[in-house]
Length: 247
Image (cartoon, rainbow, N blue to C red; front, top):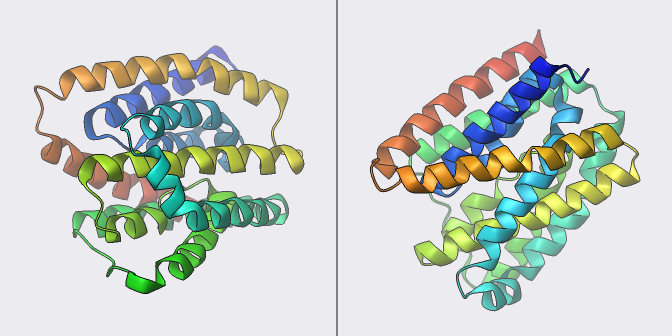
């Protein structure tokens, strides 16, 4: 399976995903998962994104000076994500791969379309803890089933009215915790093979190289314009994945 062509595609995917993350601050798990699902299938794609996603989002989540307040405020969301992910991976282990890939495509389309429309969830107010538990559980189940970390968690974080830097750091925390929960659940269900884990570790290098280049290019590119191109491309790719899964 791991031919030179496949390994080159994996490296190129993570370089591109890292570059996108370097420019706009997000997108590495999303774009790598979408492209890798097309190339190697959903289950192997989930394993491949673990190390690059965890390391890059740990970096994003740890830097910024607001880690303590973020953890104190978001612990219901994060705890529910962990529990939901374990349950979702159980569905993945027994489910039909094509249908789960189609679900991933639908989630990518939904995230891209709602982001392009600048959709905002109303602030949860005094119900924040309860809503966080519900959103975290849904996000975790979808993470376990498809590897998508973003729906509905990112929209919930946007609804909290966090400052931009704190929001970016909070998304890093959510994605890093989701990566850990997914790795544990995949290992527990014996869905994470040793060769996939080693390739995932090796993929960290092109991901970091892409991030470094993206951070350099950020000074010369329109972040808003680049983000729009990213979301339009993600919508098209998600639609293609969904249609292929339903064929």
